[in-house]
Length: 387
Image 1 (cartoon, helix red, strand yellow):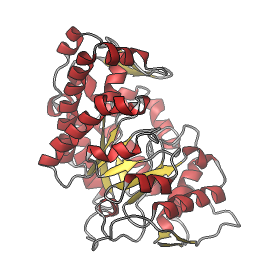
Image 2: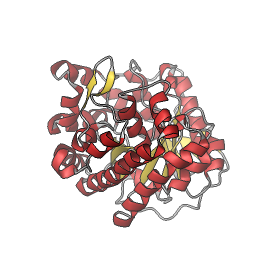
Image 3: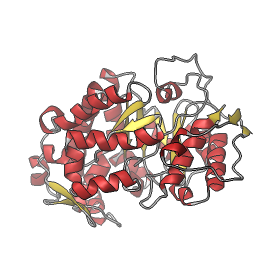
Image 4: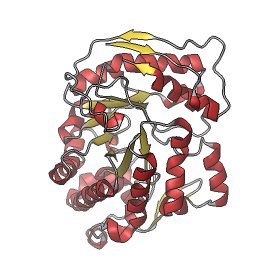
């Protein structure tokens, strides 16, 4: 693979009133071998991200960033002053659209992800919760017994989250196929972790106690989440999402053998169900800290595996195999470095990923306090790449 990076005056930098450093080098060439399927002919009517995922010929890797709409942006901070409740911001159509488009208007990423939360469906499943500033998610009535699970109802997106569908439809019109509109959901084990633990956790003792002492209860809960999240993905696709990312953030707290029992079957069930109705919808799976599970992740049937930064991209490619696309995996902390350092890490990641079937992204969400000008530089360099 050969990569050429070139850049003129950046529209991103202009929007943020930024200038490139005096020793900034606007071109680079890189080469790498990779076990990636031969690219197919490009379909210019599709967004770049979709073409890349499907193995079609593209001139550069598409780029977007997890949590690209969020607290590092001044415009978001200003909006939060007027609307301090996270649930208001994520459950009001106008606010969801505005926040989702904030990074699009400045950086023009190749993916525009819906501003929402993986816990958004919980209320519609009879699991009351809130997200409190400084504390994170709080589940008011944690689920730990058969009786608790019996109270959980199947999720009906049309009834409980119509604002998600409305926002996705508006985003498709606003973005106008210049980028892919992305939806997302939480994976069953990760959702179960929150509702069993009662919120965030460091040790996951409550859900592991349930898994290892009363597995039937946990499996019953996981099944309800699997059925509901498959339906939620289908709903998002019908309303405008062109790809959907599944976040299984806490599955990597499981050993490989326990992942195979409590996460993998339910992820596969979701993928199989969605593919029956939406066979061409790309599904992306992200699980932070997944180095010990990499070979198992493609067994879910997803189209893309998103790697975190603790995995070397070249090694991750080899372990995943040629049939699945890869996303990632620059360390979010890199964005606190110099522009030259950011450039080098982007080059290294793209070089190791090889040509095609790669979405350039971070290995996790953008950190609070990340300099906005460095995010602008990330996109400027990424969009100037050429294979």
